[in-house]
Amino acid sequence: MRSIIWKPFPKQIDFMKRPEYEVLYGGAAGGGKSHVQVMDTMIFALKYPKSKQLVLRRTFTELDKSIIRTVMNLYPHKIFKFNSSTHTGVFINGSLVDFGYIATDNDLNRYQSAEYDVIRFDELTHFTEHQYTYMLSRVRGSNGYPKQIKSSTNPGSVGHQWVKRRFVDPAPWGNVFIGEGGLSKVFIQALLQDNPFLEKSDPTYRDRLEALSERDKKALLYGDWNIFEGQYFDEFKESV
Image (cartoon, rainbow, N blue to C red; front, side):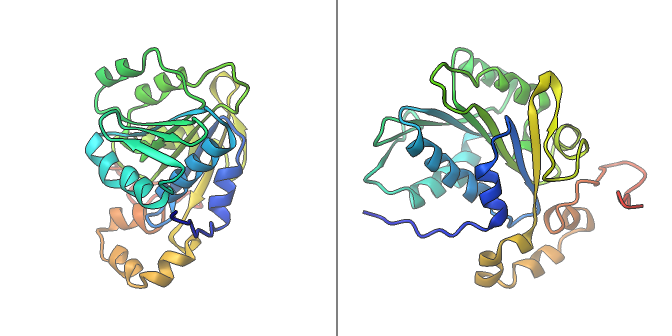
């Protein structure tokens, strides 16, 4: 049986323990976002028998080459089986994890009658606000288990502005606030330096991020949400 040796760092632990209805873990590249989503999925599944979760990427190709590969590498085969034709994983206690995608609004129809305890968006800024808010309605059930939307992302891409408006602007990171419909929300800022394991195992990764264009460096190295594509104030800083 494959054994898992994983030592989450503090912000990953914070993400896993958060009880708020909407949780976003986002910021710089290398902050351990996808990894903690995968591990948090397993922990929830094992804690709540016959629970149902959905993990989403924008396209299935992205899902297959990131989340699913990580799942197959980390989850012990003795307790988890993956059906590649249905893209569904089943744990030994009956908990289910569907791996899906929403490339266009038409793909929302496949989830019209679905219900999940937890829905997870990986790279949330790749989705539109309509796609996200529609899926809020799919988090439901009478089993008494926690109900949440847990997302991870870098700044940038098509959904940058609405994600920033929904999670980043209302309160300093780590502070819980109440948003639309009385739903509790929290944003956890992830930075490269939060992940000591990556910096130790790949010490030149920071140098490669330093070599990016100024805008990409702000997003991926510094996790800077104040990047405005095509707008006048390119050097906007919240502190100023």
